[in-house]
Length: 330
Image (tube, rainbow, N blue to C red):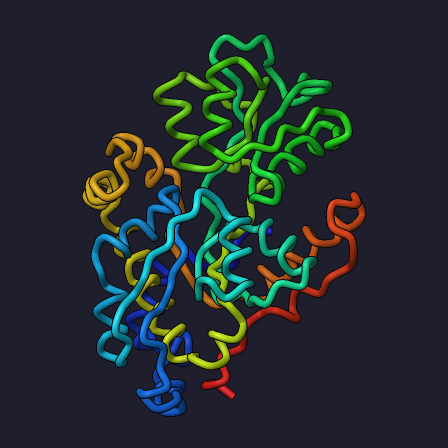
């Protein structure tokens, strides 16, 4: 199912109408927050260069400014290449919050990780790619072929969904589990037949290497959401701090949607990825952020049930069990 009625104009209007902190209960939570002496001295945020919004937030320093006003001394940004290792660190308490695709939280919850869903945003565009000169023209021709994607990443789910549209499953291909950097080398070296990945790696593969798209998430059957996740103990102990982080990310998100070309230049400077790549990424992205609602819970539960049925996760999980409900709103 598509993300529920949260396009960029609607979300901007919501921010203006509600004085955006109320969206997260930040104003209510601030009064109930523990004394400043008990606030964390440092908030640790996981980020990926592939996430334009995180790149922009880090570059602009808006979260640091907001948290300093609350009494938090500093923000530490910890870089990860993709979602699963970020959630491993999050569950262990090595970081406090971070953004990932739809699939890593399913694996983390199945493994008993100590985390919660804190907010939802439309997923970055993904694609199933083949090299420029590949003889493969359709998804059906991937049968028996080597297809790379990050194990436990959002690309894992997109691969499963894409194959299902032509009656195939993971058993019909040879999965090759690679992080984006390793997959880039394998793709360009002819060591894999296809690669499922998200932006900006998707855009880089198209523009630099002439990759061809077999399927992408403009097909609504393949779309989903991404999530801001938080360590459960941190979320429950410091709700006003988490709410403030989410509020600032929401503001950055709305501004990115309004000024994609201008902010592409900022993202390029911060990430080292060419501005033309970011213009392409922003041009096909959706810009919204909001609490995790019934639509997202249903999406994630369907994904979890599918993964259990396929034997990818070992047990049934109930997604709603780890959706954060700000105690400041109770």
